[in-house]
Every structure is written in structure tokens, then in C-alpha cells.
Length: 294
Image (cartoon, rainbow, N blue to C red; front, side, top):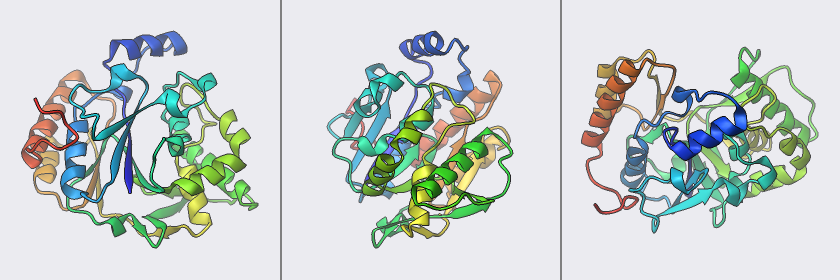
């Protein structure tokens, strides 16, 4: 079982230049803000998921790779390694997610982590895969009330189309945590729906996009997903108090956590970031094999 992590350092001057040149849009700093927590995601994997075979870090270019990364243990994957060049550069996670299965040397079973998701307590392989099937909670929703849910509905409808099924009144939405994916199923779906997938690829997010849930929906509809919710806690930094977040990191009550970024004042961002990093450093103080010796 492998782990795939997508990562953006929005403070990288080369990345900022490319973003503004290609999109003609001022950078929304909060959308790509680096909280400095990637190190602790990897320490959490080392401590709580020792069964992971390989970690793949997906970035837009070499300037995005943190200096502390140990390349002997972390496979660096550039967007150009997996995404056709005519769709690059992209500043939208959805086209990246459509091509993760193309990573060279990727295991059949892999977990896709956003860089705001963390394993907080010891996990077992069967938490994520059992008998060749992924394990994750799946729910149904009725109305796409925002862009994100529109994209989820798009993904549900294309998964059904790939299987010769009619569009449903409802749409599937997997639990927002690391996604258990099967490489062969992703390859099969991409091959079947390649034209539709490629027509959805954009440099910035739009209402017509697809996302990684396309693959989970497809697997679920084929009976390749065990519908069981993970032990997880979700935090939004916009409403969570620093003390509550600090307490959870120090004394977690769930195996997995997502610390979701939102629009914040610079003062609030700095306060929360320092609080989070202090807690993570105490929770995971030991350098992992994924880090260079300093």
C-alpha cells in the first residue's frame, strides 16, 4: 500500500509568477497557503502507518520540493510526469487528481492524502483496504448548493455513465479524508471515459470540473468500496479555537484528522499556524525517515 500526497507551496516565487501569468488572477493566498505541516503528516505516517510501502509527493516543479525531503524515501512526482503537457501548467487540484494513477511504480492499493490530512493514532491496513476493496464512508446528497458539490455531482454522473447507468436524483459524496483507491480501477475508468475526463481539465477550478471522487464513486457502484466511515475529526481553522485544536493534536480521540484552511486575517493565520506547529512538534518530535538529517 502506497501513499500519494499532493502539495503546493504558495509562497514559492516561481509558482506565483506562473500562476499570475497563466491565469491573470491575483493569487488568493489562503487557497495555497503553506502551514508548514507537511513534515508532520509524514511523521504521522511513519509513526502510525508503518505498513506503507512508499510515499509519493506530487508537485508542480522542483522549486516546490521542501529542502528537508529525503528523496531516497520520498518519490518526487512532477505534474509533467503524469499530466499531458497540453493541460499544463495547472493550478487546479482536480486535473492533478485525474492522473494520480499514472505515477510510475505506484502500488495497486494506494491512499490519496491532501496535505491537510493527518494520521493521529495507530492505523491498520484493514482500516483502508479489506479483501481488495477500499474502505470509506459514502453518503448521498440531493442538492449541489455550491461549486464543490456541483463537481461532486458531475463526478457521480460520469461514474454512472461509465457503467451504463442512468443519472440519479441524488449524488454520492465520499467522506472527506484520505481516499482508498485501486490503480487498476482508476486506469479502467480513465480509459473508458478519457474524452470526457480530458474535456473537464482546466487551469483553475470551475463548476464543470470533475474530482477524485469520480474514481471512488465508480468503485462504489461496482461493489469495490466497503461503506464504513473512518474514525476522523474535521477542523475548520476559521471557527476552531487554537486551544481546542492544540488539545486534539496533543490528545487525539480519532485516528485521522483534517485541518481545513479558510480565509483568515494574517494575524489569525500566524496565531493558529504557530499553535498548530507547536502542538505537532510535541506530538511527533522525532525526525522520520522521510526527512534529511540536518
